[in-house]
Image 1 (cartoon, rainbow, N blue to C red):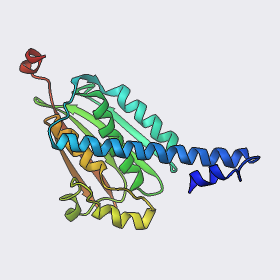
Image 2: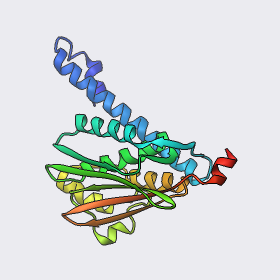
Image 3: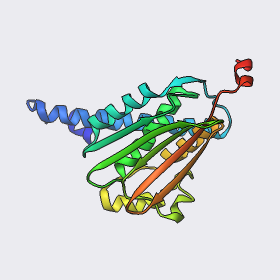
Image 4: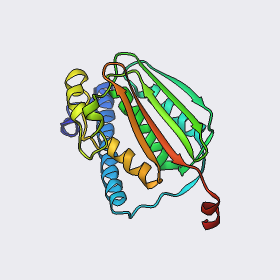
Length: 213
């Protein structure tokens, strides 16, 4: 265990190695904290005990912050192509950021050696439409039908053997639950070995919404 190595004192006098182990320990702690929060959030969403604080949010700052973060932390080259025709969405700023973060994270995990991620937005009469598309390993038609289920990672299990990615399969269920809490919809379209595209429909703020605020 990383913590045992740090406690043992064997790394004293080896600052570079010690700093590396401390960084790993922090990463593991942050991951566990995020996972715990995700489980609690899903539970509250399923029981209708978590309300979204929806406002008119600016999409550019959210997406720019996330793309910079993932470029810095990714272990492989990542190229983002951003085209935002719709500049705002009626959503909870924090939870929408988490949704986009989960989709980007999946795109990088289940990808080839070089990653290209397209993030686009547009607006229809009723929705802000946000799409996240990658050039990764893709998802089979059978797995697309169950990908949003809790703990379901049939497709990911097969991918894990190829690229070492792992997890509890909570990410896409979290995304699905949050979008439903926004009274929106999410769809996946994918071809194995070519691409995966997630499309999110977020309802626009209506006059009745404004009246109720």
